[in-house]
Image 1 (cartoon, rainbow, N blue to C red):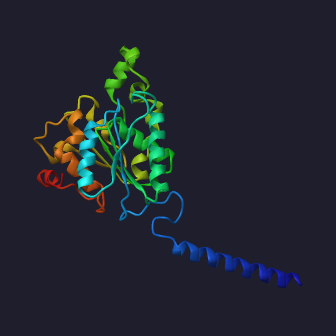
Image 2: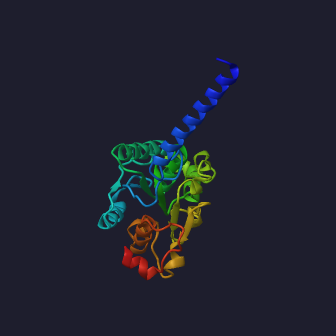
Image 3: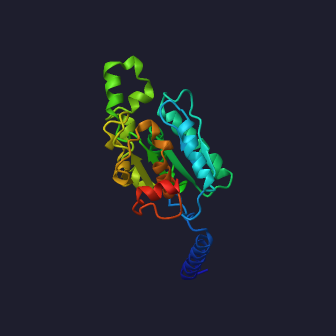
Length: 261
């Protein structure tokens, strides 16, 4: 066979291969074309709720119940140990739960993190291919830039500040990983200006996320850190954020949120 004919056959083979690949990609469902790409926003999967420091699940069960009333499959995770140890271990707990859900046929998951659970959600999204596995993330009163309460405890009484406490001190290496988390997956961060655990309360802000201070919508709200995840207006915000409507839309007025919750 002449070199010219051989080259022609190679070109033809390459064109056929490209055509086959293009046809396969075109046949894939929307949201599954390429690793790391955004998942379909109109196909909500299970909601995984991550407790905060200490691992108490009580308040999140109230929120989970409201989500179930909307027809969602909502599951509150049990943290590893007593919930005050290495937050990296809690990231692994969340990753295992996501894997179980997606291996079981879920198109994706939504993740809701309360307090330190929001930090866990952000770390998971960055480390474990969140854009290809999570549809949306909501953080509630989360010290995404740390809390001076933890910083003071680590400095003044280190024996009373377990590992997760130290990791939540402003400037920690772990918190430094969160840069960019708000642009990885559609994200709502909500907090209260009455928070005395996450200080300053604006530590809950995250670049790239939709950031909502509760009192901007409900000026009379006196809810503090411990009541956020069971507050009617917050529940309404979460339910709305996890719908199929774009998360970027401006939140509704306070009265509408209470009705939604």
